[in-house]
Image (cartoon, rainbow, N blue to C red; front, side):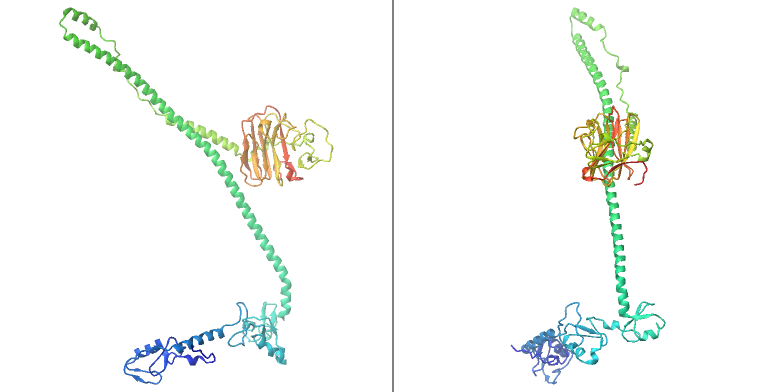
Length: 538
C-alpha cells in the first residue's frame, strides 16, 4: 500500500478543476487525475471530450477508472491533517495564540502584548529585558475586553464617580474631574465589601427560606383543616343521609300499609260475595230441579222452602274506596324537615365559637393537696409541670397516684368554661372529673371511671371514651378551651387559637360535683400546662 508523504502540501492532492483535495479520484487516458464528479460535470458541458489540463482530445467519452494509489494517499493526507489541527487544549482552558498546527495550553497572558503564551512561547518574556517589564497574568481569553474601546489603551484605572474602568487617556478627557484610583486599589476595597454583600445575600436567602417554610406551614395547616372538615362533613352528612333514608323507608311503609288495608278490605268483601254466589248457585240448582218434578206433593213441599228470599246483603251501597295518598308525601317531608332542622341545630350548637362561652368563664386554681410527688405547681396555682417536687407531701386521700391534679373549685349545676395553655407540651390530657373519682389507680381517664378528657400523645389527639375516639388534628394545639353544661350533660373541647370545635361528649351523667383536671406529659418535662385567663394574648 502506498503511503502519503505527510510533508506534502494540500496542493499535491488537489483536483485541477475544483482546486480542493481529491474526492473519489479518477484518471483519464492521458494520465491526469480529477474528482469523479468534477470531470463528469466538465464533460457534460462540452461538445468534445478533452483533458482540462493538457487539452488532449478524445474521440469518445473515456471510461473513467478509480486511481487506487491516489485515493489511499489522499486518505492518509486527510488523517495527518486532522491530527495536526487537533489542539492540545481541554474545554475551559485558554490556547496559546502563537502556536501553529497543534495548539498548546497557555500558561500566562500578557496585558501589554494582549497575547496568551504556552511555556515555549513565553520564554522571551522571561529572558528579554524589555519583555520582562510586561504585566503577566493567569491565562484569560478575550484580552481585547481589557482595552479601552475609545482610546485603544489598557484599562488600568477605576472611576469612583461613574464606577467604570478607565485607561490613562480617559482621566484627562471624559473623567477629568472624577476621583480615580488604580484597579488594584479598588479591587481591594470591593473585595473587603464582599463579606457584607455575602451577609446581605445570606440574609435574603434565609428570609426567603423562612417565607417558604411559612407558606408550607400554611399549606400544611390548610391540609389539616381540609382533612378535618372532610371528616366532620362526612360524619354530619352521613347522619343526614341516614335521616333521609329512614324517612324514605317510613314513607314507603306508610303507603304500603294503606294499600295493604285496602287490599284486606277488598279481600273480605270478595270472600263474602263469593259465598253468596255459591249459595245462590245452589238455590238455582234446586229451582231447576223443581221445574222437572211432576210429583205434586214433592213439588209443593220443596217450593215452600224456596218461598222465603235468600239471606243476602244489599250490595248497592257497598264500595271499596281506594286509599288517599294526598298529603302523605308532604307530611313525610315536613317530618324530614323537622328532623334535619334538629340535626342542623345540634351541628350549629357544636360549632359555636369559643367567644360565646366566655361569659361562663370561671377562675380556677390547682389544688396542691391533690397533686402527686411527680408534679410541681406554681405558687399561684395556675401552672403545673412534670417534675418532682422537693417538698415532702403529707399523705392525703385526695392526692392522686397518677400524674394529674384537679382544681380547688367545682361545679354542681349550670355552665362553666376555662382555658388551658398546652404549647410546647409533647403529651398531656385534660378535662373534667367527678369528685368521687378513684384517685389511687393508674387509669382514670374514661367516662366509666368518672372522667371526660381529651389526650394528646405522639402527635395524635383522642377523646378518652369507651371506645377511644380519634380526633383530626388541624395543627399543633396551643390552647384548649373546655365548656361544660352540667344540666344538659355536655362537655365540649375547643381549639382556642383556631377558634374551632374539637369534640363534644353529649348525654353525660354527672350526678355529683365536677372538677377541672389536668395531666402534663412526662416527655414535656418542665414545660408547664397553664390555666389562662380568657382573651389573654400568648
